[in-house]
Length: 467
Ligand code: ARG
Image 1 (cartoon, rainbow, N blue to C red):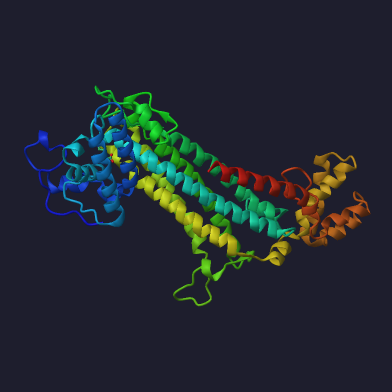
Image 2: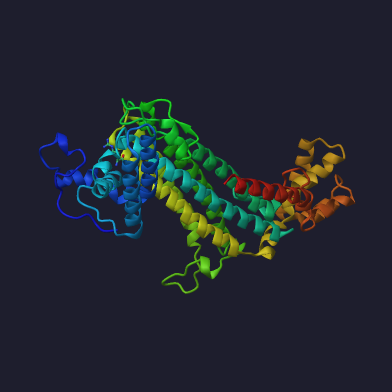
């Protein structure tokens, strides 16, 4: 697209009321074209619906309507192919489109803005833009979930230590661990869909703040644009940016989940853990240290979540002191929202590639999980099955663990030598036994995980269909 031409002149759409020209410093601060031009398709879509409604209620005749629609088509083509010539007075995408339509359609074009304000127009454009963008982001979340599911199915009976306090706690199937991240993303999908519902309400017809004296029809224009609902209060319609905050929260929570997944992959890729090896295509090298292979994608998933949190809190701070109705502060809604959507999209694609190509080092994971202490609670539960109260069983096993750590011998030998246990107990300390013994629904053992994988696959199919 061509850059803006010429000095500020007296051609602003609102110049009738003014004698002097705007200062360059005002334009530099006030103009939003540099970022809101990405909503040009929505602006034109909204204008098409608006003028059809105007014709429907008798405010335009058929010739005027077709002249404006033709001009809107040409304007859209120019904006899409980069031949649109912006001029200095194009403050934002709305003024640029209206100016061009008026140039192309003459007097009819001058009727485009009848019964409409940029205040209801910008809110409409942003809602239309966001509704489509959220559908695209949710599709990418589903791609990542599918990658996690594929890797979980592939992992079969591979297990690794589960941690609390980052201390080894109990072994869990790798599939179970991967699915834990997958289920968190299901909640993100729900939130994204909810944000889409909230965005899908039409503010068009609210005018500057109070509606119109003209017989415009907000309901027909909302239907034409595929909105689910229409505003109830014109002041609220042009002031409301809850839908932006809702979307930012949904994306921020997604970012926090991706950050936590990223953090684990960073840890697992370290020499100390060695649980995963990164694919060349999804890792970076060091400019100085030839041996390095760095998990930059996982680190950026972690790092970018800070930026998402910033966008959410920034918008809330912008909104909190605003009197009704529209205030120019609201122009600050778009850059954080655009960036949050772009950032989420970037991180999701890179993380999907990383998850798809990472190598899980099963032997290292299992070796780490095969510490006999990992089955300590199973020993206590063995005693529980023989009627020993759990607190007492806990103390018996705790005593054996302490003696083993003090150097009295392997835990298995102490179990064999203990009066508290019969000969069946020592089998619980065999490699892999602890995870196989986790039988409860939703737990980390093979039977429950098989059920879980099916439920997860069903959930993904249902979420894909929600589209
Ligand atoms: N560029 C403006 C925005 O993004 C459009 C609305 C301008 N409205 C106004 N009354 N100046 O918020």
